[in-house]
Length: 287
Image 1 (cartoon, rainbow, N blue to C red):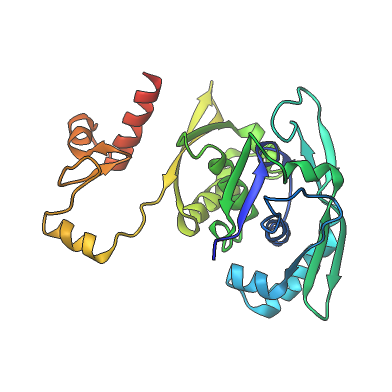
Image 2: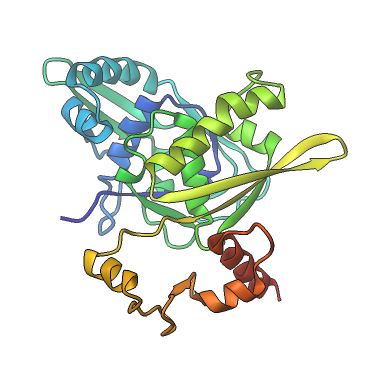
């Protein structure tokens, strides 16, 4: 059976909003049910159960029940600020809307059902150009709403392997308001926990660095990529015997399609194979 997938317009990925992790789980569980082969309307009712949340997040059923009820009560009032049309464009127009038009919690059954608001529908359905897709299981065990948002922002630029963002923009996207105004607190409370969860719980690895404007840290640079998949036992055994063949026919294989011999010849002091390969890829794209 195929994994449930989350599809979102890039404009929604970059929108400004604040949701708790359980509110995220409800919404993402419903978004993953949106069919790709049929139009979505604001009359569609999507249901998430406490058992599904417990299984997905790896928490106890009683914990899922309690948080699901609390999250469902808040979700109706949550709003989102959108800056672009579903498939890009939109100029300086800013749209402030709600995620949902109706939320129904059935305590005896431990379910939450919702209908998306009419303005939200185009950002979840009939996406033809600028959209991001990922498996629901990629973020299922994250207990940081910031980690889920960061993962989505990285997935949007998955093919590039790098993304630079202005800290003020990221704070606005996360709707932090007056929280953590000092950069050291922002890093400790928001950035580092999110980075750790993406690295630990998702199929993606990510590293970050910072850039200053004058004396002030103004930008964050994320470098990221897919974690290598586990190789079959036979392949590991063959490699141990020196018989494994890489993508380019070399005995030592390749990273990002670049033979290890080329990586070794061009690596800088202290660089890992992966970092060197990623740098060479980026240099080739620019060149």
